[in-house]
Length: 336
Image 1 (cartoon, helix red, strand yellow):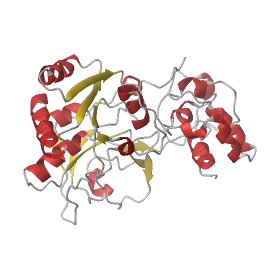
Image 2 (cartoon, rainbow, N blue to C red; image 1 turned 30 degrees about the vertical axis):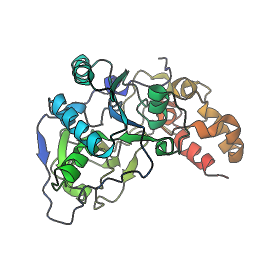
Image 3 (tube, rainbow, N blue to C red; image 1 turned 90 degrees about the vertical axis):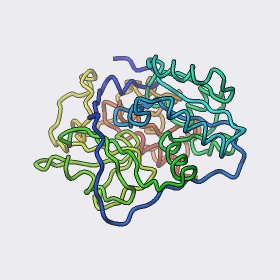
């Protein structure tokens, strides 16, 4: 198997969500929507409707089969808060109907532009979106607003419209839940402030060990305390069954890439396969950082363009030795 700069996670791990969107009941304290409007003038606003991860919220849940209604709301938001900004909507190049809807609506709108791309992970990461859409190169930890660019979450468009323009209370965020630890994948209406255990209790398998993650498996955050409340930035929840079996010789079974919490055998040394080089979307050689780290020379890793890393996690995912390359990179970055 050959990997070339990014990975098609969506087709490799097809994930279907029930079309019925269900509300999660919770009577405790919750948080209302708020949006931090930037003080700096915004010249460009980018809205991503092209998720590259199978556990991400699909665009149909946001658009609700009515692209025009979403665009009307977007136009109201622009008129009220960003009248001088150019808007660019990023979509999957295979979504012909959506692309046609956007083009038709934008024919007489000089401020609205459509950009299509392949939904390969992690090309919806801010660094890569800005480079591909605007031709601007920024560093991983650089705030795009410094350049007059705002990356606007599609749900924030609805939130701004309802909360600030219509003056309605907006207490709900759409959260997709998926993974092998659930009976079914669902999209839920969740009030931020709701504990994770309340969100998952109807859907999680009770006869297994499992692990819970916010915002995906590759670069998300593991949730160890399920009483933790969900806040507005949380985009999705993934629940994986904890399997402790080992797969013999996984490094010769690269055509059997299944997400699991198992290490698939003991950790091994780097086998110089170059998979991490081939898959890196920003043309780095992650194995070099592991060698620097293993020799106790973390600071030396910066010689090899360490700061360009966008921490997508693909190198850890693809490594047949299951080296924690992303963790190694983060540790090397932390050294001054």
